[in-house]
Image (cartoon, rainbow, N blue to C red; front, side, top):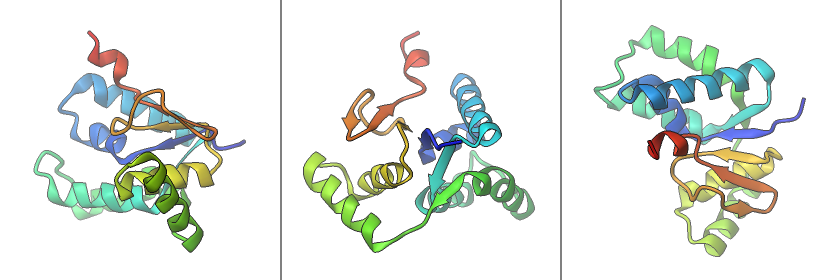
Length: 145
């Protein structure tokens, strides 16, 4: 199966925080489906950002063993994109062209490198097209209610 979607860090944060139950449920479904079907992926950056949020945010209380289990059972199965000089060059090109932050550009570059059609993120413009990639905010429907 091909990788269809790239999941940005904020999706994992909603799944873990569970403060907004609607967003948490949407995040849970998206992540579970991506793991079950093998059609979603993440990059090294998402792993790092997610673990950093878990370690630093009081709303997410995971002990070391729980964090390791989450890393192994949720993040590891989705982890496909490693850092490379080519990835950084692509991110710099995206940053220059679209005026995104460097870290957002790195997420977009990773999704493009994976050949994804969809980037699930709350941080970028919903519906924006970048090459073959479309930004989709999976929470947009729940925000309009």
